[in-house]
Image 1 (cartoon, rainbow, N blue to C red):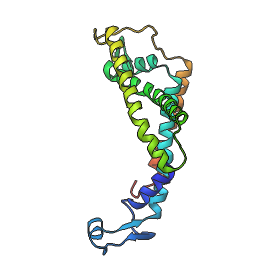
Image 2 (image 1 turned 90 degrees about the vertical axis):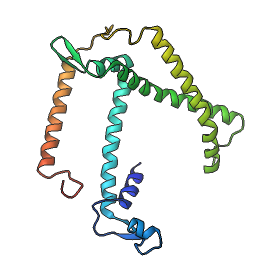
Image 3 (image 1 turned 120 degrees about the horizontal axis):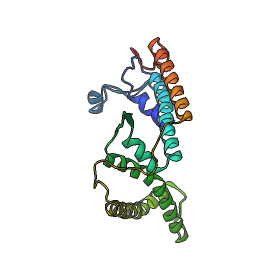
Length: 211
């Protein structure tokens, strides 16, 4: 992932002025006049390196949230995101249900893919080499999609049988309330974000000219 960001940004870095070297010059037929030449910028590689860590930090935080939060609590947190008085404001129940379902599908897809790969290997499928892996992906795609559609249909039937969307104001078995650890963590986030914004405002952390 890091190298992917570095390669893409080194080739398509918008703010690059002096290329490190040129892959396709602007005088090259057809492609050169259209693209203005394809160049590699060292600044773009550095920018891609930094952006890859930002992306991985965001993904890691999302995975940590998903791994440590029960789906029902995730739905309740999205629907009742903010409480003002006795009223709760947040995302609609449909969107919260879709987010929770998509999140819960990830481990199921990984498990189903591993089961399918093991079954194909037992039947003599070879996994060594790029060609064999591409063939395995071709055989893996259709069973995986069919299982996902089957699971989604079963989930939709279960939601309808439990009167999902029957009433606008839903009740929850477990009411979420902020405790002492939550307030400590929110304070830490506030201090961390304030410090980051201040450092960014005075010039630290900028990776793009003019920012």
